[in-house]
Amino acid sequence: AIQMTQSPSSLSTSVGDRVTITCRASQGIRNELSWYQQKPGKAPKLLIYAASTLQSGVPSRFSGSGTGTDFTLTISSLQPEDFATYYCLQDYNYPLTFGQGTKVEIK
Amino acid sequence: EVQLVESGGGLVQPGGSLRLSCAASGFTFSDHYMDWVRQAPGKGLEWVGRTRNKASSYTTEYAASVKGRFTISRDDSKNSLYLQMDSLKTEDTAVYYCARGSIVGSAFYFDYWGQGTLVTVSS
Image (cartoon, rainbow over all chains, first blue to last red; front, side, top):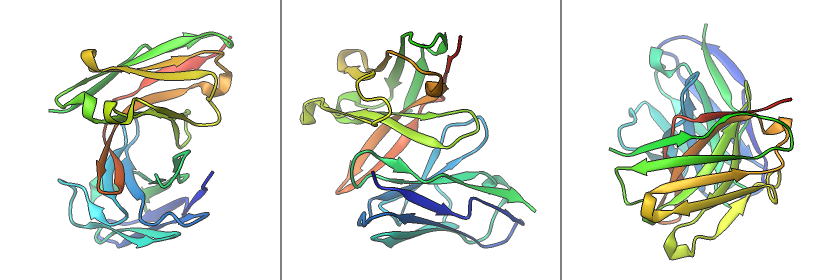
């Protein structure tokens, strides 16, 4: 199974900060990666698919990049509603695998 | 409006069985792959398995941790997805989400999720 390693596992940051979360695949997955945001007690929400395509309705402060094994989710200016846990997901092959999550907390 | 509503969760003893359902509305259910994803308490997301659409002959895929114990099925006439869980273990305790899969070109993603249903396996 492809392992997806996210870093950092958690980070404390402030409103207005730029946030970068990375996801590394244990083997090349082309651009077959999506990013999800999850708030406590809620279902995940799609942010980015195909590594860099912004899902309709998602604010433009979210962006994704990368191909192959290294991927990045960037939030250009963190807003209060962005404090959540973020997951990457590879769908290159089975089993689909998620990163372990990155919790973004208020400093 | 796309909606996915899970039901059927509850408390079950180890070794027991449970069947989860996911009722879909607001889209052409038969066109989409449908997956189950679970989340153990305080833990991350884990993919459970998939049923493909009619065009792909309703074939299924499973995570190794559930293969041979869980069965995913669907009834397109009822716009419903199912997860039959047998030989349950304590480590199957989790919130189970159904998720709609969408494909654009070679890109796959889960664009809609249900609210989840909690399965607790305990004696």
